[in-house]
Image 1 (cartoon, rainbow, N blue to C red):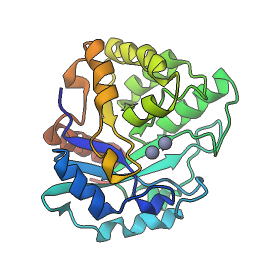
Image 2 (image 1 turned 90 degrees about the vertical axis):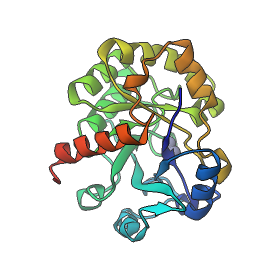
Image 3 (image 1 turned 180 degrees about the horizontal axis):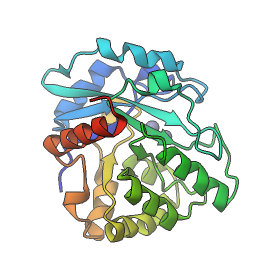
Length: 241
Ligand SMILES: [Zn+2]
Ligand SMILES: [Zn+2]
């Protein structure tokens, strides 16, 4: 199993990550990636830039030293309706939008509210994927989340960094990933790198997927071609093309 595009990476712009975009690109190349999505945090994370920062993504080159750079963001879910911290005029700018629920922004409200927060975010047409749905700080009805992702043709994430830093995360992945197989929900595998040294690091994620015999055709970022097919699909969804 191979992953050509890292769909979740941070730069110094997030305010708490350590490498620049150019450094990330250099290490992405070293790690053998064909490309990556730069997904700095939305403004509800205290150190992150304001949402209008997304309007400057267009100044970035399409690729750096042969490594494709896609524009993204990791928006924050800020309430139990799934509202995001990015205004629509900016949310429509990136190629790929991650929505994540983070303890520093919103605490668990219990299973029903946490699930509604994630489902509400999935229903936002700009949102492609929920980041680290394994996070044990929240209590999700995984069947409800996966079924909603299936209904909307949205993605769920397998976040390598989360397995390393969130005890209990991997156990949760063994709950939602079999549901993804059952309902045909596609996933992305990501490093969530907060420094260049983490670019393209997927070991724990790939081990779990291998243990589950996870079908490679459901992994949207396994190849650059498949990821670009997905981006074309999402462009039609959001009505930009
Ligand atoms: Zn996150
Ligand atoms: Zn992140």
